[in-house]
Every structure is written in C-alpha cells, then in structure tokens.
Image (cartoon, rainbow, N blue to C red; front, side):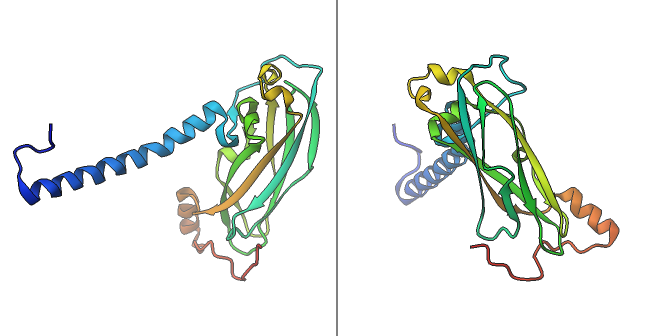
Length: 205
C-alpha cells in the first residue's frame, strides 16, 4: 500500500521524502545506544563489563594485563599508566593506576574512552571501579593518580577463543570536554574565569 494514498503528485513525493529522512534520522539516533549496549554485552570492539565484585572463583592459571594510555589530538594533559603491566590469577581482583597532569593555568575537564585487546577478551574483562566511569576535572598544575580495579572472569578458560588469550591490553584515551555545569556555577560565584583554553599552545603529537 503506498504512503499517503490520498495525496497525489509532487506533494506525495515531498511527504514520502520527508518520511524517509525522519525515519533514517530516528534509526541513526537509536543505533548509538544500541551499538553501545551490543558492545558491552558481547565484548565486540573490545568493550568491557562492569561488575560490583569478583565472582569469588580464583584459578591457578595466570594472565598478563598490560596498560596503555593516549590522548586525543587537542587534549593538553599528560597521561600515562603508573605501571606498564601486571600478572595476576584469573578471577583475582587487580588494582592499577593511571597518572594525569594538567600543565596549564586553567582547569581542564576530560573523559576517558577505553577498550581491551584482543577484542574477544572484552566479554571477560570486568571493571569494578574506574576513573573512566565519570568525567575528570584537573585544576591548574594538578597531578592525580586515578585507580581502576578489575578482574578477568574465569569463564574465559572455557571459551573457544578466550582459552588461548594469555595477555590482555587495557587502553584508555582521554579527550577534552566542557567543564561540568556545577563547576561553572561555582566559578561564577567565586568570580573566576570560565575559559578552559590553555594560555600557551601545546603540541601533543
């Protein structure tokens, strides 16, 4: 049955085109949360899981977790893992730290994106606490060490692909975001400037 059967000629064509545009826009909007959900459920693309605690099962088999850090092109922080790798038993909780520094004279806000490689490990890599769960604001000249606690689900040893994974790399990329509204209001109340643009140029390549 044609769309808009009571409308003829050019008007029908216009209405059909508008309908298609609106439909495609809606699908595009919906695909973002759906893709995020799909990645977290399946581990596709290296997305990880979130857990309240470990499963309680700890195997004798060990696995190596490596830590990687990078910055988006215009992010003016410095950002690095405190330690490059650790070895722990599968199912055991690990605790690692990343260090970030704001070298400029204005506050800068950031948010971390993350994944693990190989991608198949994402379905078995569980974070309990992570600095990546919330936005971070560093004051002028501030240096912080940010924790991430995690474990590798023992189910990995029974997976057809996961059983061959002996090393997992956890990677974070920080990108700059706008300062939170609560911080902006506090700055206004204190009569402080709201700019987050560093006063000096920086080459982050």
